[in-house]
Amino acid sequence: MSAPRILHVLPHAGGGGETYVRELQAMSQFSFKRFELSRHRRPAEAIARLVPLARTIPKHDLVHIHGDSTALVCLPVIGVRPTVITLHGSHLLRRSRGLRGGAVRAGLRLAFHRADAVIAVSESERDEASRLAPGAAARIILIHNGVPEAKLPEDADRDGVRAELGLEQGSVAVLFLGELIHRKQPLQFADAVTRARAANPAIVGLVAGDGPLRGALERYGGEGIRLLGARDDADVLVGACDVFALPSRWEGLSYAVLEAMALGRAMLVSDGPGNPDAVADAGIVFPVGDSRAMADGLTRLAADPGLRDSLGQAAAARARERFSLTEMLRATAGLYEAALGKGGAA
Image (cartoon, rainbow, N blue to C red; front, top):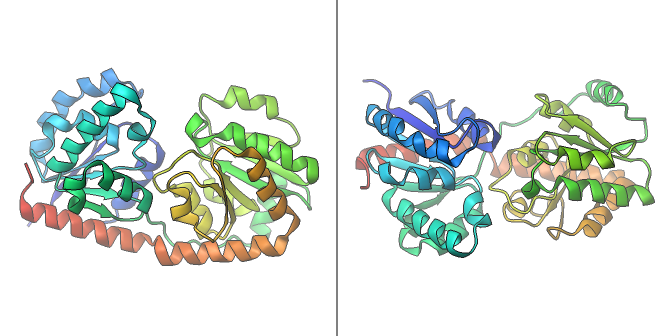
């Protein structure tokens, strides 16, 4: 008997959705194919791809749609085959207001009712989706993003990377890792690091990533803020830093945060939806948009190596206990099997 064929439909390449799909490939009892709606993140391109998508769907046993914007584009074909939607942060919903917001909410309610299951990756996302579509609440399932248990870096390896980054012996390195876009708030990161350096010049901000805000960040460049550009060695950078910071307005459940927790880093995150779900009390959580509070948290962490160590240990323990990749795969496989057994909702 052949393995059930799963079609992953993504809005575009890259981002957390890419990491999520890559992790699901470990489920060897299924076969997988990817379909990206857009190469250049253009809505018109995504809509034009709906016709070839409609031709592709009948060749598969289950369709897994990634992101709320993808769910809206795919609304006409949801239910042609058993369908699962993962929200990945509900980015379109959370940034849409007025008439546009009303249309987005109406479309997502319909998508949730047509799908066999909707995966929320954090408690915040599940609660928000259930309020949006109370009639579909039973189909909205919490399955946390999961990461493999990480091996902590050896001191020699860590010291070597820090030397390559030009960090001095007593430097306290704080890392921002992500796309340089407004939602992630890299400018607030740079501002908070600059404020904290006024109290402790040993603090050094590392920014790994690229995006439209890179030009605006360059004015912070210099000794205190170092722009590393897009990197493919995120785990190495995380292992070399002392503090991992993410001041984002909202997240689904950030893989960068979970991976930093698994590596035992001290965490400094905003209370934007998704971040407290990940970190809870295993880190310092500050009010979203508050650069001064972020700077105060960073100053506190920089001055207290013992606090950094204890929070790092708590973060690693929380990642092992709550965000296991094995559990994510087990729960997702069960959801697939239930949807395949029903044969599709619509």
